[in-house]
Image (tube, rainbow, N blue to C red):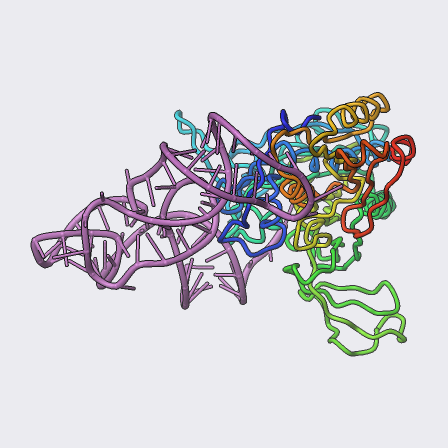
Length: 409
RNA sequence: CGGGGCAUAGUGUAAUGGUUAACAUGCUCGCUUUGGGAGCGAGUGAUUCCCGGUUCGAAUCCGGGUGCCCCGACCA
């Protein structure tokens, strides 16, 4: 991609009225645009990051046998009434011109479960796992922290349907394992934290929390083992010894919740009457699980975790481009040649081919973009038949031959 | 929803009752220049958030509203 053709505009200064690192850096770097509080546009650069996140999620969920579908966001009131969720306070309600009332989906049990009702009748039809990646709407009393808490955001939601609790339990553990793998690939260290089940279940649920001072949840966890609880259920205090392993000490830290998995049981299958006939011919309610992963929030969390004063530092897995090729004056021929070679090798490269833009501005833009690898060519390097190679976030610059640089990439 | 802060050109700021709202940056044009947001010159760009009030006169004072950020409450 040539930067002269790419729709991108960075800001010379940080926008006022934003304090969180993810909002400041993503807005200034031209990744996103703020439409209103908690509502953002993903500009081409930011969309690339988001799509990379989605790609990893899709790969892992498809691999575990879940099928992707896409449900409506506009959900008729009648569906919400069946499950008694019409009066949920975070539900955005809209009317159409004929007086029909709708709720904008914040999760999709009400849409998916009736679909399953048309399909499932026997124990042979189970289990089933379906997911989507979709815009969600929540009437948050206070949107904040850029992409971390929005009124409109993007989430992957997976739902599983089982014949009994035992099958749900094993699937639940499987999802937890896959989630860990997804977050690892995303470059996001997460802690699996026990949390309250809210309306859904008296059992604990599990949250996937990224520990960072920028987080809005409070987590108590053990320094020595995997014990971790959200403050809403925690009975431990900071500094105490761990109730689980007895060795470690309890620590307290803030976290961003990037995922949450629930055993729904029959909370939705009962009111919607989703049932199946078991081997003996008896009717049983389907047992359900739901598993959320906030992809736009992941993008915000990644920035919070990995940035410096000049911009974002993306990991290769989610970076909008793999290489930023910067052409300075007097190196058009050399830059074009490298660009062509990288394209032939299917390297995802952003080529700053802008003429008349000063080196300093190009470097500043490059830092804002946070692309992991930078290649700089100039009259100097062209004369020496070499290029400069530099990793984002590192000081040292390597002067190497073009061939070596291309092979390195 | 309680509390606090802020609102002036695309962006960041200045102007505390008095001409035509200033500066930087951006953008356009010309020249020059090319290693960390370069230089010179000429342009462009404003409903000073909105409504009302006070005043000869309001970006500025008063009242009401809206929006944004932050703290708290809330939070599948």
